[in-house]
Image (cartoon, rainbow, N blue to C red):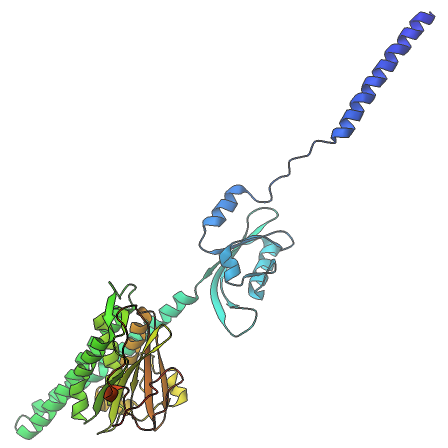
Length: 403
């Protein structure tokens, strides 16, 4: 009996020891970690990654779980939260009723300043916990639509004037068929209106071509001296009719990368503008200088000048500082807009300095291309000799030769 009891006690001790060993081993290893469920579905993550729109995923507390680079670039996400109040209001509405919202909103461009962006925002639930916010920047598209709309309206108005004038003059000539002097007088006016109409159509076509992407085409090295010589020759007839003297000065041998014909058109437009707004027997000069890696072509005149308020608008299409003078000279209001587009296509810009009664200086700035060595012009052709014409802040010619 005692042997049986001892044997049972031994078995019980063995079982307890085994259980104790296994419990100790389990305690050392710790519990097996559970596999957490992913916060976002992998398919959703991959889809958001390929979207061109700004994409933001929010958790139930409206903290940003994931945001694409455009969302940060547009200022929609700042410091881990949705920044624009208008988008936050849209998110709150979706939280309330679960209905997808899709609206066009104006949001601040940055934390300070008056700039705004026009964005198309779509907010929707993608799971029980997460919301997705998609935003597409429509600012540039709407701006281009407005420009095209204004362009069509302006073209219609500008074409209507010479076409209507030609129609009235033709009727007048018909009525005055028995008066040779009247016929000659009205025929001359018809010719002037036809010339103006032709110039307007030509510049509209030129401007439309420049606004097309890739209008510059195949660029090459352009000799600035050749551009100025050709532009001055094309403008000389108009200048001589008003007894306006044209001079070329500044450094020689500069080159830029671009298209010769487009640059001739730009400089010619600046010269035509200077001649048109200058008085009889005055002086217009075009000079070149180098500032760092820029070639600056400045056209200086002794004309009526432009007020500070109007200087911001002179590069707008169809804008004229003096509409009455433009009608007399046949101006279309497109010349400076064409210059602006040519400069932009060549990686440069155009600026203006002017004071009423003291003339104007338009400066076309273009990136310099490495080429032949630059040399000074002969002493008698250094800079246009405009008396008492100060240098512009944008880089107008500063040296003057004797008249």
